[in-house]
Image (cartoon, rainbow over all chains, first blue to last red):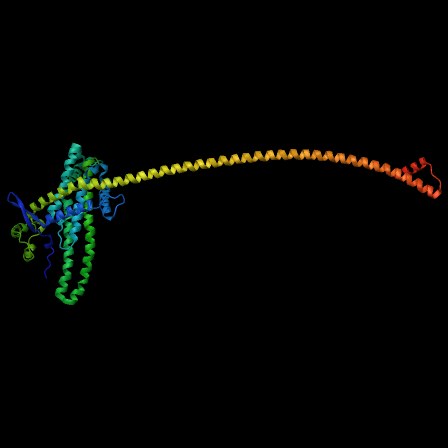
Length: 249
Length: 190
C-alpha cells in the first residue's frame, strides 16, 4: 500500500468556466471548497435568528462578531472598525475553510500558496493604499522609528522597508506552511496505520494503534491550528492596518 | 520541486485526468506550486471572496451588530428603569421613615401633655380633698373637745351628786354644796 501524503492537495478540475487569453479558467475542487466556506459562513451568520436572548446558533454568530470586533479594537483602535467587514471576511473565510479541511477527504484551500498569497497581498495593498490615501507622505514615518540614533537610522530604515515589503510573504507563507505541514503529518501518521496492518497482519494492526492515537492527537492539534492560524492572519492584518491608520507609532 | 512542476505533470493537469491511478506522478509535481492552476484558483477566490465580503458587509454584520446593539440598549434601558424604581422606593422609604418619626414625636408630645394635664388635675383634686379632709378633721376635733368639755362638766355634776348622796347615806347629813364641789374638783384634778 502506497502512502501519498501530497495527493490531498491535488487540484481536480470539475468543469471549465471559460478562458482568459490562452488560460483555461476551470472550476476546481478548490473553487468548490471556497464556495462551501462562503456558504457555511453565510449560514452561520444569517441562520441564527435575532432573539434578544440568543440560542446556540445565534450565539456562534454573535461570538464571532464580538471576537473579531474586540480583536480589531484592541490592536487597531476604534478607527480600525472601518475594516471590520474585511477582517471579519478574512477571519471567517480562513477559519471555516481550515476547519472544513480537517474533515477527511475534503480539500484545504489555504494549503495552496496562491490562495494565501492572494489574501496576503489583498491586505498588503489595502494597507499601502489606505495608508497613503489617509496620511499622504506621513505614511512613510512607519519606516523611521522615533528615538533611533541618527548614525544607525539608515540601517534601521533599510530593515524596516525590507520587513514591510516582506510582510505579504511571511503573512501568506505562515498560513500556507502551517496548513500544508499539518495535513501532511496527519496523512503520514494515518497512512502508517494501514501500512502496518496490511504488511504485518495482526501484529501490524495492533502496532498500528500507536500511530492511530497519534493521528487522533494530531487532529485535535490541527483543530487548534486551524483556528489559531485564522486568528493570527486576522490579528496580523489588524496590526498592519494599524500602521496605515496611525503611522507615527 | 516547484520548478519541476512546470513540466510533464502540468500537462496532465490540463487534461483534467487526475485520478488515483495516475497519482504516481505527484511525486514529481507538488500541487501547491503548479502554476497552471493559479489562474483558476485566483478567479474562484476573487468571486468567492467578493461574494463573502458583500454578504458579510451588507447583510451579516449589520444584522448581528443590530441584534447586539438592541440587546445592549434593552439591558441599559432595563437597568435605568430598575435604577429609577429603586430611587423611587428609596424616596418612599425615606418619606415613610420621616412620617414615622414625626408621628412618633407627635405621639410623644401628646402623651406628655396628657400626662401633665392629668397630673395637674389629680394634684388639684388631691389638694381640695386634703383641704376638705383637714377642715373636717378640725371640725371633728373641735366637736370632740366640746363633747369632752360637756362630758367633763356632766361628770363633775354627777360626781358631786354622787358624793353628796354617799355622804348623806353615810352620815345622814346633807353636806354643804360648796364643800362637795371643791372636794370633787380637788379629786378630779388629782
